[in-house]
Image 1 (cartoon, helix red, strand yellow):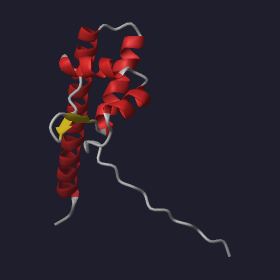
Image 2 (cartoon, rainbow, N blue to C red; image 1 turned 45 degrees about the vertical axis):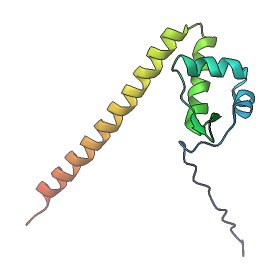
Image 3 (cartoon, one colour; image 1 turned 45 degrees about the horizontal axis):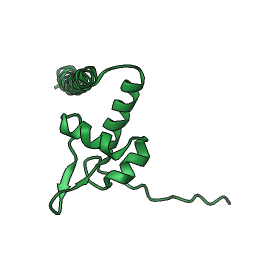
Length: 115
């Protein structure tokens, strides 16, 4: 008989601040000062804890990776800001479409059920 092992899957809160700037810099291969500059111009917004210490979430790291990808493609920082904002708007619109589809499907189901 074959045994199946089940491992626990850790659910990660993407917005939970967890990484210090040095760790994030190594993860995204940027200098910490560059990350601070991106913060100063509003591209990234880490959480501040215990006074002034910055902590970055998984979502912050993903955003930094997008910034790195776009700048390596030759997009300037003003363009990066616009692209990131448009991506966020597209994601929000897609979520709204899915929500409306679910409502429509529920309505269709309720109309097709015999009484």
